Every structure is written in structure tokens, then in C-alpha cells.
Image 1 (cartoon, rainbow, N blue to C red):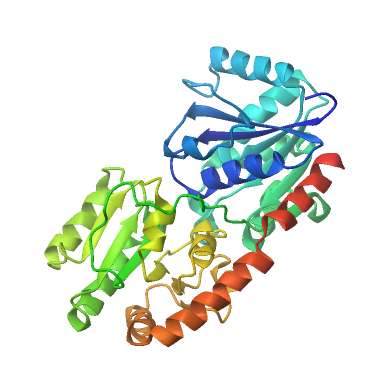
Image 2 (image 1 turned 90 degrees about the vertical axis):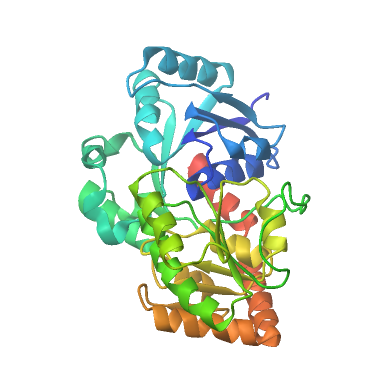
Length: 364
């Protein structure tokens, strides 16, 4: 460790999700920087993504029981001292614990990485985030995943534009392991994959509407949905709609999987039907896996895809179906758009570019 810069990625859990994947991607990427001692701490609970943490990343889970859990806070403080941490890069709501540590050790820099993906419905954001405007002086920097969040931070928290960085997400799939752990349903060459937890903002109900029309035209095609199933009212509504539309043999909910790379390798088209997004890592993963993409025009989706796929308005079933049908009908078009998106993912959303920006923030 020596005199290396101690940087801690702080996140609440490692269940499958965009913020969680990015915390690991950044921690793993920083291992390659000779001047950084890279660490990762989970405040609440680990999860499926733990297996992707680089062996060189110092990692621990605190199992906190609440916001003011004294035992958890003591564990975090001890970890920070032991690893000589000078920068806490807090993802999402973990920023509150990062600020607790800042109060104890004023020299620590707190970088808040805001992954909030529902800026179009900003009123649903927990009110406690607005309290941050009173302690914004304790934040070293504010990192956002799209321009709308940047505007929200300036308007609601009073953070100056010079203290905000729009950092593009980057993909880092388990490229060395493209094998499936468990076989997936559907016909080879006729699978449409959606990487998204079953959450309201991901709008799987919209996906089922699309699937209903596509499967009437192409009954041998299937939709493979990969992401957490939370057994809440929304998940039950999605399952009920699949049954009501007689799509049990065409739409499959696989739940959380750690063999995402293998699933993408066995898929043909990638989709996102979200009603709201930040900068979805799923699109970058589709690009890395050379899949053509159809997605909704929310968040930074259009910026990511540009002309290397189809971007349609959320809720426009007919336009989404038309775009999917064009890909289904033409392997040549699929390959062309997939290669274009692959090039964009490599050139515009690279690990190297993101790490370079972060190092400037940490050292500033």
C-alpha cells in the first residue's frame, strides 16, 4: 500500500444493478493504477456481484442494521484507518455514511456518485436527499450519470457547475467467462434479451405489450428477462400479464444471474423498455457483446445508441415492434448495427477515459 492514494468505493449492496456494477467496475479498474490502493465496502449486504470483485481489491461488508448503526459505523471507521483511505467514492444513498466519516475525519474527500435514474419523475426521490444542500460544503465533488441529474443537483442542492462531473458509465463484463451456468430457454438465434431488474421504471409491462405483438408475427422468438424479481405488486402484475397474454412460452423471467456474459452470447437482440433511465450499463453491455439494440428514448439512451440501433419513444408499442421486426427480418442489418454499437461502446464509453476523469477528481 505504501504512499498510494487510498480510494474507497462505498455502496449499499451488491445485488445486480447498474450502480452496483459500476462500483465494482471502478474498484477493479483502479487496481491497474499504480498510485492507488483500491477498496470496496458494502454497507448493508453483499450479493450476486461479489464474485466479480478483483482479488486485489480490499473488500468487506458491514451488515449495517440502520442509518445510525453504531457497530457498522465503527467497522467502517476501522477499515478506513487500516487502509489509509483519503477518498470515499460514495454511490447512491451510501453518501450519508460517507459524510458521517467526513465528520470524524475532515481531511477525507467525499465524492458522491449519483446514479438516480428517475429524473423525469424527480418528485419520487426520497426527501432526505434534499438535506444534502445543507451539507454540500462537505462534498468534494458530485459525479452524475446524465445531464438531467446534473441540472437537478444544481437546482435542488445548489451545487456549482464546476463541482459537478458527468461521468459516462463503462462496461466491464466477465469477458473471460462466456459459458452459461444454467441453460436458458428459447431457440438459438431467436432470443431477445432485456437486462433490467423488475422495477416500475424499467417497465416490463410495456415489454409484455411488445412481446404480445411480436410473438404473433414470429411465434418462435422469445424474450429473456434478466434481473432481480422482488415478489412485490409490480412483479406480480408483470407475471399476471404474461399469463393473461398466453406468453408463458415466449417471455421468461430468469431473475438475477451472474452469467450475464454467457446469456448475451446466446442472445440475438438487446432491448430496454424503460420509462426512465440514467445512463444504462445494460446498453454498454449489449454493445460489448455485439448485440443490435432497440431502446426507449429516456435518460442518456439516445446519446449511447445514436444511429447504431433504434431509439423509440416510451409507450410507443407499434414503433418498438416495427423496429424489432426490422432486426428480426434482416441478419445483415443486425450485424451492421451491432458492430456500430460495439465500436461506440469501445471508443466513447471506455474504462480508460472514466478512470482518467476520476483520478483528476481524486487528486484535485
